[in-house]
Image 1 (cartoon, rainbow, N blue to C red):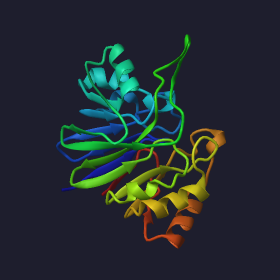
Image 2: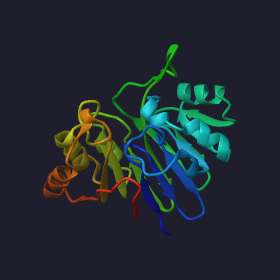
Image 3: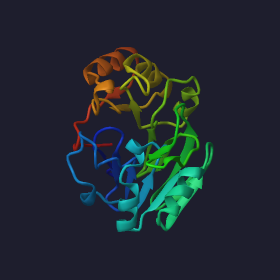
Image 4: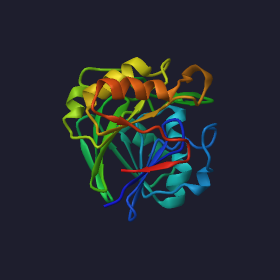
Amino acid sequence: MSLTLTWYGHSAFRLNSGDHAVLIDPFISGNPSATVSAGAVDAETILLTHAHNDHVGDTVAIARRNNATVIATAELAGWIGSLGVKNTIGANHGGTVQFTGGSTKFVPAWHTSSYSTDAGPVASGVPAGHVVRFGGKTIYFAGDTCLFLDMQLIGEEGLDVAAIPIGDHFTMGVKDAARAAGFLKAKTVVPCHYNTFPPITQDPSTFREAVESTTDSRVEVIEPGASIQI
């Protein structure tokens, strides 16, 4: 089965198996890297790693338009539901949730998580990564995180692809992300969460050199709006 992974810049991805589609952290509007509009993006399922505005992004509008199911940690899913999204599923670390065409297992991430509004922060809770089984493949979306040793356990999931942040400042930088790739042992590693804003400017070729010289993984640097076949 052919599986397409599209990167919209930052940490926004889309998986398309031909029959079904999944969005991850669909920050499109306000994303200077995005090459499409939020209105042109659709999916049956939306997975969120945490509540920060640059990850929740256009979730509510896309979910309403597509009658999509939003899967997130419990507090975030509850808040998304309060905004009029009919189909939400809240879960937490260690839990697996089935969705149309696949499943996601919630794994830890070391970060913070809240959504900023004019009235203050809402949807507080914990961040998570997703180990997604979809289209006959296993893909890890780390979300925003630092390096942590239990990534070795995530690597035991048998990863075809790992999408990990390299931007530094708010997440792992290149050096720690290359170590993470060694723990994860994915066949293919995709860098994300970089070059969106000045504090997270990075050269992905440096990351590729670090990973491919120290691990058996291959790095795919995807341009915003482009896709790879998994």
